[in-house]
Image 1: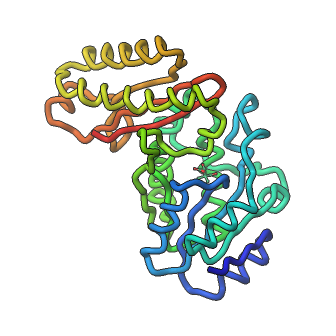
Image 2 (image 1 turned 135 degrees about the vertical axis):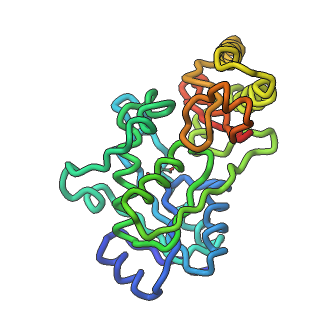
Image 3 (image 1 turned 180 degrees about the vertical axis):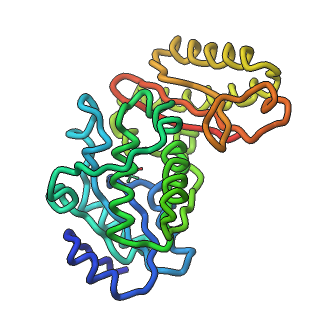
Length: 283
Ligand code: PAF
């Protein structure tokens, strides 16, 4: 299929005028089967799909992997054409941030300051700001995000609700390799030995999800989480967190939540060598 690539906002707006409604799939490129699943899901809405590729400096900390983040535009364009994306918006930094982006979206710290937000200060402000900007540029009817970035998805849903943005957010289940590893552009950083070990993160989350069903008190749950992190550390990982949270707000479960079976999710983030991986399992 033909894909039309644009790099500027003027070109983007001209291309968007060809159809009344669009679905947006925002990405940072280096596309894998997970991203292609997002495009396929977007196409189910029977509107043309615009994918964006932009490695957003605002969401990277000073010691993070902004510079080495893989940029593979040629291959990404071919993949997007294959899966039937109509339009690709690939701005450079000067186009996305022609002036320093001094106006920002400040997410609720109760959500943006925990878990990945605690480990990566400023990360979610950067994400919310660029997603808001992409929504303004594209004005999509739908936008599709993966559940691998569970906290990001919840934060974007809240932002859309609170700013009454006219876009329907669709969350899609994580796509995994055969051995269970969640697909991620950062998997490419892993050495072959690390790659073989990487499914241990998902296994740890599943183990905690199974074990946590027997917990009746928050303190007991906390001990299970600590043990899960210790076991992972014994295999050479450096965990940031492994924790059971309520799906609705990512806060810890109370004894009452445990008793009532409140919908929950086990979330984990851990470093293996130089690579930080995240994953989650709903339970
Ligand atoms: O999930 C991502 O790839 C990024 O955080 C996003 C949503 C494209 C914003 O830069």
